[in-house]
Structure formats: C-alpha cells, structure tokens
Image 1 (cartoon, rainbow, N blue to C red):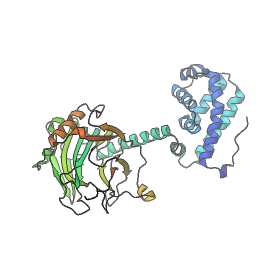
Image 2 (spheres, one colour):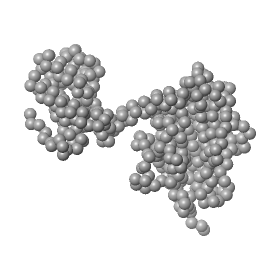
Image 3 (cartoon, rainbow, N blue to C red):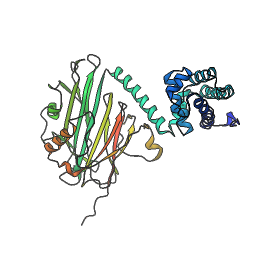
Image 4 (cartoon, rainbow, N blue to C red):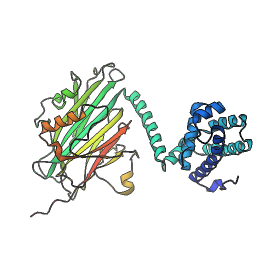
Length: 416
C-alpha cells in the first residue's frame, strides 16, 4: 500500500496527525471487518478476538467517524491497538495487513512521544475542528475542576438557577432589574468551611444622571434585614444565620460557620429589585450594558435566564463572555479584537431563545421554577407576558470565573 509521504521536520503536527489518521483508518477497517463482519459490532469483536469490551467499543466507534481527526480523537491508545492487532493475528486474520497497521501504530506512538503534552495536546488540537472532541474534552476538564474545587473550598451545590429580568424604569431613561438566585442542595463538605451565598456591586450610571441605583425587596420595599431578600416558600426552613460583609460598593452575604451541617443540604432562593441599574440608551461613554455573574459555588449545573421587556433593546440578542477576573474587577467595556479576548475562556455557552412570555421556561429537575418566576413577577407588579427570554445552561460550570451577559444599546430616539 502506498504511504503518505511527508518530511517530518517540516510538517505541522496537524498535518502529521491527519496523515497518520488516514493511514490507520484505511488499514484497521478491513481487519475489523474480517473479524466482526461488515456491521463491525463490538460484541462480535469481543467474542471472536477475546479483547476487552471497552477496547472493542472504542475502536468500532472510531471507525464509524467520517472525519479523520474525529476518528483519531476516538481511537484507542497505541497500546490498545497493539492488543487488538495481536489478537487479530492469533485469530488467523491477514498477517501482512496487521503488520502494516502495526507500523502505522508505531508512527502514531512516535507522534504522541514527540508532542509536548502527549495525547492530551493532540486531543486539544483536534478539538479546534471537531465539535464532539471539544465537547468531550471540555466536559471532562470541567468535571475535574468541579471535583477539585469542591474539595478545596469545602462545599458544593447541585444546581444554581438565576433569573435576570429588565424593563424600563419610571423615568424612561434607565432600566430596572428583577434579580433572582436559587441554589439547590447547597452542602458543606467540611465543618466550618466558609460559604458565600451571593454578592452584589452597584455602579452609578455613567452619564451622571439621577437617580442612583438602589435595592428593594420584590415588593418594592426597603429591606429591614437580609432575610427580607429570601423567598422562604422556595427555600429550606428555617433559613440559616446570614452574615453581611461590605467593601466599598460590594456587598457579600455568607452563611454562618455553623450552617449548613454536613448532613443537611440547603436550598436558598433570593430575589430583589434593583432600580436604575442600567442605561436604556447608548451614551458617549457606554455602547453596551452588562450583567456579570461570579459563580461562588462549585456546582453540577447552572442555568441562567435573562428576560427583556418588549419596550427595551429592540432586536437585541444578549451575548455571553467568560473571563478570568482581573485585578480591576468586572469587565465593563467590550473591547474589539485581541484586547477583548484576553483572559477569556473558550467555553461553550449557547444562548437559547425562550420566546415571548413565560410558557417555555421549565427546567428539568427544578419543578418549582415556573411558579417561582411567576410569583416573583407578580410581587414586583411586572407583566411576564411582555418579556422575551434567553437561556444558557452549563454542565459543571467553572467556579470563580466571571460570566457576563452583554446587551447592545440602541440610540436614543430623536427629540420631537
């Protein structure tokens, strides 16, 4: 069989990977077909060759991939391929074909050995052009971070759900927000591990106009105590003892060191109104508005919903960026090009359109969510049928990374 010729010193890793993938696929396919028939079932390979079930399953799955790089990503390691080829020879399958395949396995092993970081680096390179490889790599990496951060911080949460709804304020120049956070089965893993619940930073409007941002309960009242912000019917009873810490414009609410106990996970739901929190129209200083989230809790799932009133930001579909927090705090300006990509994480954050109204907001595993949202809108006196919704859902979100929703601002209407 003619070999793909390439001068190794002058060829990129991607090109070598492509060449090795094409060789291996071409040579392994007839061997698998000879052992397991055209269908290539893993169970047949296990029965005929006596190889491990997981090895057979991974090999046959790789051979079903049409793209060479997708094939290489799914392919077993060289050690597993050698086991398969030895078993094929022992079963009487074409020894010359198995020998050629074994030579290609050697080139695969050489490529791994010569690549800094080995197979992991190759998989990362493949993920740049393979959606499946990227999704698998990302999920595996995020799950590892979740386990590590849960251990290091000493607590974790099953699910975090947030709802951020915005509508024009009474003065017509700025925007009010309804902000709801729900943490489901928040559990302390080590006694006295510090557990933050949420933090809030209010920035005054950049155009210098009054009034300034202010925080109220969902009913539009000034809170007398931190418990006034919690929706007790959607939280565990009784509420734990909270501690409040203020640092300039930042307010952080935490749970006391004695709660929750190791065997008593908590569900905590908070809701508040923020008046005059955003600009309604573009100004010389502001072209985009934003809402940032810094995830305090390692969790299995996070769902973030944004609802925009029909009279606000016409035609705007919010976008999401993920940043490593910088010393200056949250990103408040979207910079073009490389500047805007600095310190970002290239994580999949799809934004789904939920449509107008609240008829399509159910969340699997969070049965009370639609009821909670409707109750919150009713308390605030807002009409849920007037809002269009957007959602992002992430499995094993990376904690202590800043997620920012961006809203492109329209120009102010011309004065009559």
